[in-house]
Structure formats: structure tokens, C-alpha cells
Image 1 (cartoon, rainbow, N blue to C red):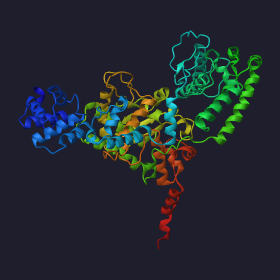
Image 2: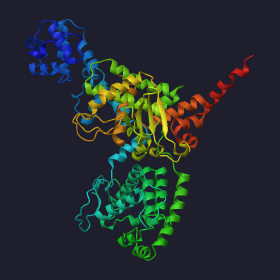
Image 3: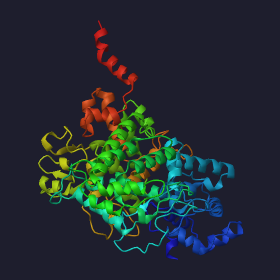
Length: 619
């Protein structure tokens, strides 16, 4: 059999190692299979063929027993093949574990020690509990709440619904199944049309003739408002007897005009408080949104009084008298709602609580004297992983992309959106700033004069484009330093690894691209997939695993790309004490840094002062 021989050189895969040992010992697969059968560790010739061709890896206890028998036959140290299996594949396979969901197999395999299948059942359970706790579920209060909330999902699907007539029967509507309450159902046509009209009004270059507005939504803001409304109407239509414990309204009674009634909002606020246990900035934002819809001259609901014709009484929420008043004097109803929203948003702001500690996942990094140096340990771990060799082409491309994502995050401090939408130009004629401004995207550009990579992002592409950081709307420009062999890695990524990830799909032009072995879907990242890719890099290379001794940082928890802005701002604060410089590092104001990003403890401030004045005490 051809796969039983080796062409020479050092094998770089497990199959290559196995073939090499068979050849060196003058053995054949047929003879080896017979010897293993006699030793009580039988393996079929077809199974051996899969191993030798790297089409499958040994994963079960009986497979490990066979490997140990081969080691004894060839005079190799016990565990030789298991160590080779780990070093060449990057992790031991765990497909023998039956109770692990398929979408978690890869990460489970990564965090299992080489000899996992040989360990006692109680030790295996201990390791799996550690993986569940530190990789998938965590133990923080917010993640516990989030995990429960996901299991009680609700909403109405107008985000991707087709515009078609729905045969709504009396009593059918949106009401979710009382037994579950965790289904997202399709919105009726009239509600989709209303939401789409609002979004079109707020995102158009100019408002329609005869109408006015205050500000213009970006695509991401429009999506956020759709999510707001999705949850709002989803709560209204969810059955009171379901796990969501909604209001139980009928679908045919829903209209966006309901947003002008204080009673509807008060029910929603009370429902959210009961569900979460307290108010957060989310509820304050919702009330500010409600106020904007009812403002005089610029409010969209105020300027669309015809919507009152779609109002119907909802028992226990909106009476016939309420509907009549709205249809008689729409402006008066909007005035009441505007004042109500103003009072509620002011009251909520005074009692809202932070529903999670934004620094909890990266606490070990922020505690370090040099947070950036600490975070760099993760990228160094990736380089170490690549240096072991034996990776398949696709695995290597993913690791290189993970390195660049984290490295660019540390250098640039950009928000996730700006980072994932970053274009790349390798020619001497980079995209003009005006064109980038039209696209609302930045670009990685090669400056042939200075022989440096630069990132140019027009001010309009930023969430906070009106911030004083962008003096007179000047673009953001940052030179990428050539540290950690970064330029060579960028070149290799652009020339080879990026195309491995794209495959035969259309090139989206973005620097970072999604990989997909099935070559399906768009290769450019969206918000969720970019977060997942970043999180995957952290759980593979960042979180220290005491059972495998892999991972860079003890106590680190899974997190997304936004955390690197906290790391960068905190590093600048610790080293300079300047809130303003920390703001420059993440393209924001000192006020935003002090409120949201930088963690600068009193003890760290004191230590910085002591360091600054210590020379004054020397004679």
C-alpha cells in the first residue's frame, strides 16, 4: 500500500510520523494489524489507512491501546505517539465524548490533555467541568443571567421577513406558544411597513418633502433600533403563561402607533425590571428613543398622525377612549408622551445599574503593571503554536488571522466595526480619502515612501465622528510599527493565508475575512462572526489551562474585541496618568475614558505620583 511508506525527511503530521515508524521498522500494515490482533489491541487495515492518510485521528481508548502496543513493538517510549498526535494536530481529538454538543467539539478537544481518554472517569469529569465553567459558561452573574435569557428567547421577526401577505386568523396573531414562549414569529405586513418607513426616514440622505428630522441614523444605529422594537413588540405578544411572561396582545392589534401611549411604556418598563431585577442603561435609551419619536417638528410619529387610524383597543392596556383621543388630537397625545418620556428617562438615569462589570473578563490583564505587554502574551502564544509546525493550511491561516486581529486591536484601539470593515490596499495607489468617506470605511495602506503600513480611516466612519478628537472632521491616521515581525506576517497573510480563508468566494476587499471550509456564505465578517473569531482566539491561546499547560494568562475569561480598548486605555493611564492621552489611544474623549474605558485605581494613581516625585527626596 502506498501510504505505508514515507518519502523521507521529518514528517509533519501524525500520519507521516506513523508511516515513518512503520517504514523504519521494516513493517507493513498487514503485518502490524496481525501483531496488534495477537496483542489484544486489534485495528483494521482500513482504520490504519485513515490514520496514515491523516483523514482521521485516533480518539478512542482502544485506539490509544493500539498505539501503546505499537510503541512496545518498535521499542518507543510509552506515550510517544500520543505526544506526536498532540504536537502535530495542535490538540487531541475528543469525538469519543458522546455528551459534548457538535459545535463545541473543537474547543473541547483543544482544552483536553493528551491522555484524556485514559484518565479515570472522575478526572475526566473534573476537566470537563473546568472547560464548561471557564470556556463556555463562566461563573459571572451577568453570564448566568444571559445564559438563562437566551433559553427564554422571544421577539418578532421583521428583521429579515419577506414582504408578503400573512393569512392572520382571529386569535392567531403573534401569540407565542404558552408552553414555551421562546419562538420568534414573523411580523404582520402592516407592522413591517411601519418599521421600514421609520428606518427609511431616519437613514435617507435627506428627509422627505414636508418633513423634518433631528439627526440621521447610520446602518448600525438603524439595526439597533430595529432590535429595540423587536424586543418591545415581542414582549407584548408573548403569552403571560410562557416563560417570557409577556402581555399576550394579538398580532392584528400591533402598530408602531402604540409607542405614543405612556401606559404601554410603563408596562414594558415594569416587565423589564421584573425580568432583570433592576433597570439598566438599556431602559434609559429606550425612553430617549420614545421621546425622539414624539418631538414637535422632528418626531417621526408626530409627523405621521395617520397611524392613529390603525390603533385598536387592547384590554388592560389601551381603552377605546384612549384610541378615540389619539384619533381626535394626535398632537396632544404626542405632547403627553414627550413629557412622560422626559420624566421617565430622567428618573431611570438616577436608578439604573451597570448590569455587568466590563473589566471582569480581563481583570488579570488590567492588574498587570503593563496591560499591553500582558495582552501580548496571547499573540506570542499564537506564534509559539505556529512554530510547532504540523498545522494544516487552513489551521495555519486561522492562527495567522487571529494574531493579526489581536495585534491590530492593540495598535489601533479601533471599535469592532471599524476593525472588521477595514479594507486593504497593496498597491502604490491607495483608495482616496473621499472614496473611503463615501464607503464609511478605513483602509490598510502601504506607504512606499516611508515603507510603512498605515491605517487611514475617515472621521465619518467612526461612531463618534462629531467628537473633538476628530478636529474639523480630520481623518484618523496611524502608522503600524514593525514589531513582533508584524510586517512579514502581514505580507504572508495578504499573499497566501487570506486567500486560503476566502477560497473560491468573491473577495470582499476587507483585510480580515471569514474562513469557511464549506466555502459557503459571504467571506466578510459581520458583528457576531467577528466577535466569535476574537473569542475563539482568546479561549485557545489566551486562557491558561492547568490541565494542558497551554494558554497565556491565568484567570482570563472569554471576551470580545471591545475589551482591547479597555486594555489600551488602561495601559496609557497607568504609564502616563493622562486621561487625555488615553482618549487619544482609542479615538475618544477624556470623559468617555473616565466613565467607560480606563480602569485607573486610586492605588495606581498614588504609585504614579510617588514615582514622579521620588527624585526630589535624593540628596
